Image (tube, rainbow, N blue to C red; front, top):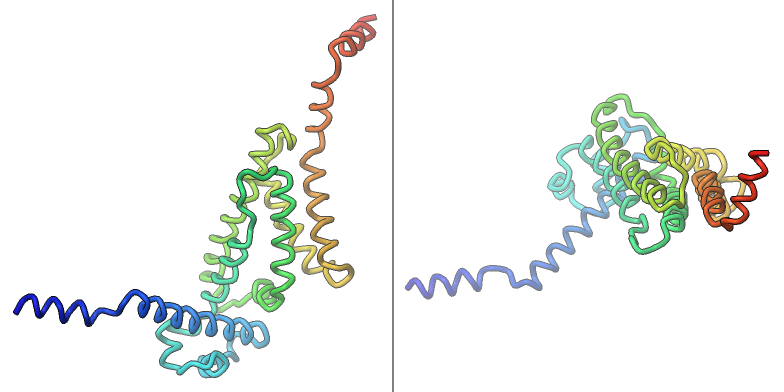
Length: 234
């Protein structure tokens, strides 16, 4: 009898392929809900967006919507968190690549990511007083991850003599601020590919300043250095 019970229980459990398909369907519904919420929150004031409208745009039942997000506030914060997570996932992570090239590529990727997601950029740029505290907590958490990402690369470049000694945290803030300014004020004037490449070059040239001069000084011939010292003593 026990063997029959175990056999029945095993057969009642979904097969791995069935579980995988169910998870994929759930992920697809969640993505549709987030995409619908993103469009609506970007195009309308927060108070005008309804869960009914989100469910309709996402092509899901309202009850299904509430299985994923318990309230409009949860959905709004979920849209922000999901967008910032995708921005982080898009960053180049190859530790073997040249650190200056990695930094340039990271700046370019972030600029292009937000340029292709103007709806999301509008949500980030629009304050929502009703959710200010919760919204700021979500954004600040992801901002710290971005700062850690950029500052760690800058520190690696300093350790390798590629970048000059500087405050890596302040430099990371400068990079994030420059990215935001380019997207808000410059992206309509020139192709985004040119802007992202220029911004990466400007940031890296600033970080390299002085490091290259020291490297050049270290590689001068000993005789030249001695001659310089002799002339200085006369």
